[in-house]
Structure formats: structure tokens, C-alpha cells
Image 1 (cartoon, rainbow, N blue to C red):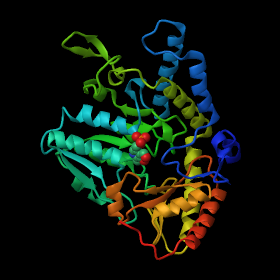
Image 2: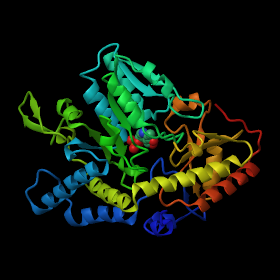
Image 3: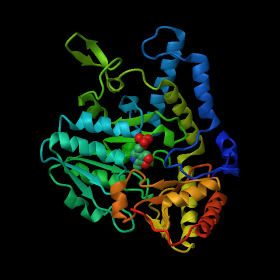
Image 4: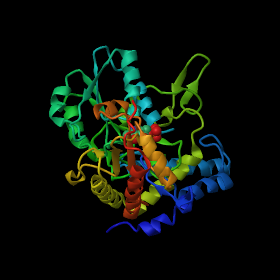
Length: 416
Ligand SMILES: Cc1ncc(COP(=O)(O)O)c(C=O)c1O
């Protein structure tokens, strides 16, 4: 059964607005998604009815706020199939979750010559933290290459995994290529050499059913704002036995058990990793976002996006002088992201003309500069879909791209 998109759209007030006099066509969901009324109402409700600091108050408001915040931790664990809420740490975003894990897990463990295995398709958020860790520990970065059609070259995996590989960190779904990587298979092979596995799930948890026990990974990171929730909330899931032995990332209030003038002991997990007042309101509203997605059904979300991506791929390939990136949708290994270039035009120019038609896409390097180099592209345009997008919006994109051609002199060169 497909999604009732018409009904879903009624929950998103922003979809009623016009941009440059045209109805908004929002195709920048891989950057951030729009928010349903239920999430917006949860924020208003928190601030109007039970705003208080959590974990420390003994008054009614503090107890209500604490209960609501901790209930979302339970819900998050259920949402990704984690065995217990003790493995769920709230951060500011996926980026912070990866930095937390890289520093708290890696600083004390990696030795000079140890290997960190990443891939060529990583977002900077799952690259730069490991570069920083490598610099401070003397560990060495290794990279799994991608094939020309934008998949991980798994033929190289066994060679890339050595007895020095300590961590394998890779994206579940590429934010540029749309490729969905076989996490279970990679994790099993990484575990055979004793490596720990972190999955960057910023583009998968919002779009398809994710079960960490089935995937078998040791840690996983994602962001609320890419899944209908507010900005300012990220999640680090990690196995409890890892969190138990990891040192805190930040020090301060709430993360301690006892403090003297010269030393401290740590709170239990997960609070050991949540120093200071957390983002209470946004975590609570994030709970509404997960409830919304669960009601829709992640299977249906994924099927809907795959359909839209396949349709967009077909329509875009029918246009002249286009380059499309990533695996062909018929291969069944991609989600709702389609990166493309109108040959001879800079994607920023393409994005600007589309914007004048009310169509929001992303144009740039998508925080994946090494991948851009591998694709031999300075930048790309990218349309990315979510539950409220329709095939009519894909048609509008295609019509507008035809107008882009008419607007620009085709001799404009892509600048470097
Ligand atoms: C694959 C991937 N990883 C990580 C991130 C970082 O997410 P955030 O900016 O919410 O930390 C993004 C954001 O675009 C992403 O697409």
C-alpha cells in the first residue's frame, strides 16, 4: 500500500507557502526535512506547559519534563531496535555523535600504525573526526574505493581489512549517490578481524527501517532534523559495553557521580556523555517526529522514496546533456536522493533558476569533497525526496530544468 501523500501534506504548514510567487516544491530533504504540525505543537506545548530543567528539580514541572525527555530515549531505542535506552546518547546532531565516539572510544585505544577504514563516499562528518583522531594518535586512514556506478567496491574489502584495522566507519546511505550500503555484510567481515564498526545513519534512519541488532554494528549516529524533528538533536547509539568503558567527551554538570576540587567520577551511561543542560524541548519534539514516522511506517516511506527516485532518474535521463550520479535505480540499492548535473552549467546557476520557480534543491559539494573529486565533478545539483513529495513535483523539476537550458547560454563553463 502506498502513502496517502495528500493527507500527509496537510500536516506540514510550510507546504502551503509560496516562494517567489510559486507553490513551494521542497526537494532538499537530505539537507533537512520539513516539520509536521505535531512536532511544532510539541515544542509549543513544552514551553507553554512544563518548561523546566531536567534531572535536578523536585517540583512538578521538572518531573514532567524529565519524564518526557527520558521517555523519548526509550522511544529512540525502540525506533532503532536497540536493546536498551542505556545505549542511547543525545547529542546536538549526527556530526557531534560521530565526534563523540571517535574521541571517547578512539583516543584511548588507537596506537600509531593502527588503521581506520573509511570509504570514498563519506560525508565530511564521518571523515574529518577520524582525520583528527588519526592526527592525535598516529593511526592511519585507509579508504574503501567506490565503483564507477557509485557503490562500495566490496571486492576490495577483505584486502582493506587487516589485523591492524581497529575501526570501520561508513555511511549506511550516501547523501550524494543515494547508494544504500550492505551494513550487515560489511559489519560481519569487519568483526572477523576484530574491528569495531560505526555506521553513519544520518541518511538511513529517516528513510528506511533500521534495526541495530540486525545490522550488528557497534555504534550508529543520526540527526533528528533529517527525520521531521527539530534541529539541535542528534543520537549516538553504541553498545553498552563500549559506552561503559569509554571516557566522557565533555565535562560539566550532570555527567558526574562525585566531584572534589581536583577530580571527579562519572555518572552512569548514558548520562556520562550528556554534560550540561540538554536540548530538552527539541528532544521531546523529536519523540513526536518518530511517532509520526512510525504511524506512516518506515517500509512505506522507503518504498515511496524509491518510487520517486526511480521516476526522477527516468525523467532526468530523458533530458539532453545530463549527468546522473549513483547506481541505476533498477539495481534496488538506492534511496531517495538523485544527484545530477546539467552538462556545461554550474549547479549553483541551475539551483538559482530552480529557486526562482519555487523549487528548492541543493547545489554544491554536499560536504563530500573527496567524493566530488572521485566523480570528477566540482559540484552537483541534488534532488532529495521525503514522504510529502509527489511525482507531479518531479515533473515540475523536469519542466523547470528545460527552462534552465533556455535561460543559460550553453557555453558557460563549469568553473573550478
Ligand atoms: C551522510 C551524512 N552524514 C552526516 C551528516 C551530518 O548531519 P548533521 O549535519 O545533522 O550532523 C549528513 C548531513 O547532511 C549526512 O548526509
